[in-house]
Amino acid sequence: MNIENKRNKLMEAQKKYHFSGAFYAKKQAEVITGSSGYRNRAEKLKNQTDTRFGIASGCKLFTAVAVAKLVEMGKITFATKLHDCVMEEFPYFDKNITIHHLLTHTSGVPDYFDEEEMDDYEQLWEYLPMYKVRSPKDFLPLFQHKRMQKHPGDSFQYNNSGYILLGLIVEQVAGCSFSSFVEEHIFKAADMSDSGYFEMDDLPERTALGYMEDSEGKWKTNMYSLPAKGGPDGGAYVTVADMAKFWKALKTFQLLSEEMTKQVCQPHECVYAEENIFYGYAGYMELDDNKNIIKHIQMGYDPGVNFRAVHYPYEKKTMIVCSNESEGAYELLKEMERII
Image 1: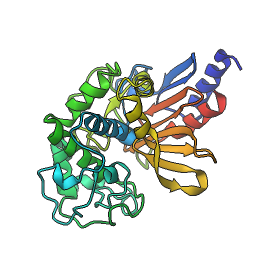
Image 2 (image 1 turned 120 degrees about the horizontal axis):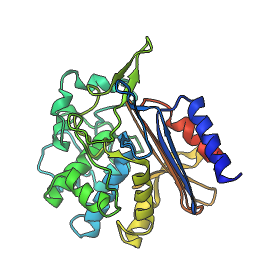
Image 3 (image 1 turned 135 degrees about the vertical axis):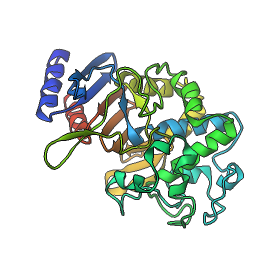
Image 4 (image 1 turned 60 degrees about the vertical axis):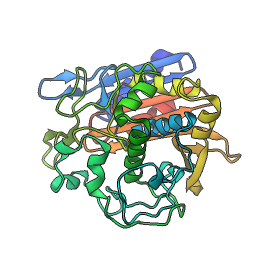
């Protein structure tokens, strides 16, 4: 199938799924990109391939690379304990929690958004106004004085609080804000000039508003559903091309040394044994029966935000889908994987 036929099929897929967002697919030298829907429904402003989208938990990988950068700089190790590098008190937390535990979702700390108990992210802001949440420490009232869910190292349990703690570590070890550290050492280093941790009440040009559909078919923005500024557990804004630049920079050792990159990208914890899905510092990954990495997997879900991306290291294939609605990215990504 030639590139034009592939592009046409992906345009048809966007219509089929009523997709709102942008996509990017690269296989070796072949690049296909496109967009559909509106970044601003009220003004009928269309999404473009250079529109900036929130990616929710898709940016946990930025946090992991930021931590690895500090390890590479000799300021911490993956075995460093949480209580040795943050000033805040966590009275019920196990003293043996390490950075490795936090990165691999095996710390056992209480998750401020436990998806097994909650299914509505908006519930979080009933008692903590979202407009006040603009830095990692602002999340602490949601979990700082709660008891551990598990013992450190027991098993994988996806945990947003652990990444908030990693952000605190970055700030206190590096001596600057978490977002400025990522912007300097990742976005700038990877030439991701359109990416950033933007504030909901001060969004730059070409940024998509996130939309949610209610039971009556009406659309509203996610302005009152998310923190005012995203943090180490999620909330950065990127373009699809910038996300491709990130993977290229990571895999060509522009962000970390070759040795550290291998350590970041290797699997650590089994998540779904039947499907050979593992988790490493670089997020989810699918392995073959010989434990070789087939693909790295990124995903992010928030009200009005849906993000999926895969990177196939041996095929040199990268696919990215950003949506400014709560659904649609996964379905389009599956079509891309089938077509390209």
